[in-house]
Amino acid sequence: MKIRELYASLDALWPRTLSAEWDNDGLMCAADPEREAVRAVVSLDATLPAIIRAKETGSVLVTHHPMIFRGAKNVVAGDAIPDRIIEAVRSGVAVMSFHTRLDAADCGVNDALAEKIGVAVSGTFGDEECPTIGRIGTLAAPVTLDEFSLRVKNALGSPLVRVTGDGSRIVSRIAAVGGSGGDFIDAARAAGADVLVTGEVGYNRAEDGAETGKIAVLEAGHYHSEAPVLPVIANALGELGIETEIFESYPQWTI
Image 1 (cartoon, rainbow, N blue to C red):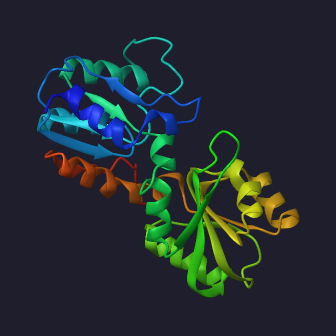
Image 2: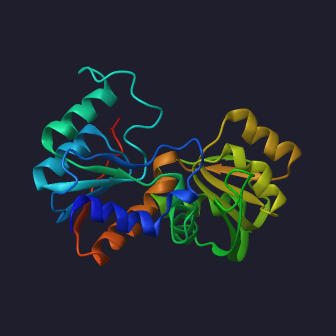
């Protein structure tokens, strides 16, 4: 399968029509779209180490976050985005990214997140631009917010979670939006959620939601809330006959 054919197959699975208008995902870089694609490195981010790993293994790099998001101002070595572009082109590494379309898609980011944290999905929610991006559902049994927060932390492997709300409150109806979910607090509340589980939210948004919207906000970290989708991407590639490996792009330090 050629690189352009691989992208077309994934584009059919996760169509651009699901992407937000402001998004910039798709085929990010392909010096030779006619080259055969046999292997793929799957990563949340198109970091320089991920691109180098793809080069070392003769792989296409398939990511969630776009390598080029808001547009490169230049391609001069010495900064993160230009260095990634230069290395990808120089090494012949094709990079394709599936961002908000993979958030909204069936069995995408937010279905994977909901499943990981034990939520049985019963519907979707969102805003005018992304009406079906979020997932809403219930737990097998009600628990306190404190108990649920610990469950999420352990399930996602997050080093910590930040919870805004009353820890003793009993919760059962859960909304899930991986990544930056602050814009969906009101929509989650309108959908009847007791808690919005997301990656990150601004301080005031979370505080306002808990105080006036009567909805708790649980921030598990941008990476950790979206990483459950990586096996989903790998499985999709495997069904197309592509050998895959998952690359850990999250920078970790031991202090």
